[in-house]
Image (cartoon, rainbow, N blue to C red; front, side, top):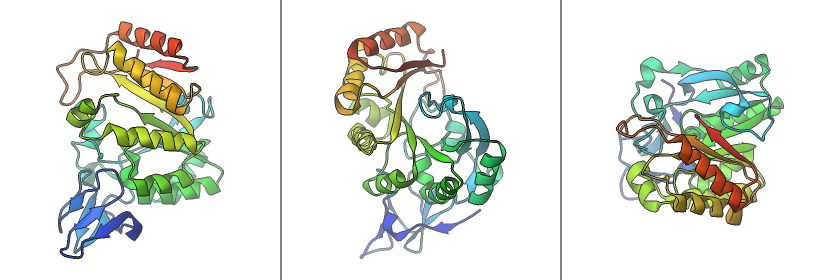
Length: 293
């Protein structure tokens, strides 16, 4: 396992104990000596924060960029997809729970250097690299180093993310990421708290920041029967995109399937996605895509 000391600007030491406050994501975990934060990747070792997954990935694959999904950023090209382990949310319906929540990175992990990832991307004629499959923010030191090397080779950088950045990490991420697909899970604070263990307002603020910085942005909304599928909530989401971002921001409505701790739900009704698309059209969204259908 690779252990890397986290940059001191991404955590704070306690003056009274050996606890540290991780500032890589919006959980701002206060971690005791010998313990991990929510993501289970960052560990307090003798009052200093270490990344125990540096250079360890779960998957590597050249993919059509449309699978991210990004339909309006370098369409028709391939992107080199990189996934890790862990997550900073605790979504009950996680579609990638095998690498985000239930995993053994020691036995399943692939050790790889940033330079090798970039060489692989070039070899497979990819025009970009994409941090995807699990939440990339929690691997910020590794993704940043790799991404900067990729940009030196003329590759673009993509983050497929839940948008739960800290104030510190969004500043760093915006310096090296060219395109984002952010999963906006719901417009309900209650949904975010109970289902995802997170704060909706932080995600909305980060979406606005990404848009204002002029980065390419697409949004995915996974619709779950009887949880976030009401017409009122879809209207709220579309209003946010139009009023706070712009009608040109592509919106992806996607079907959910029984998974992880929500294995009692039924697959999202296709009619619900069609209705969501109709609402988005009426609200003025210019680019609407339906996924898993």
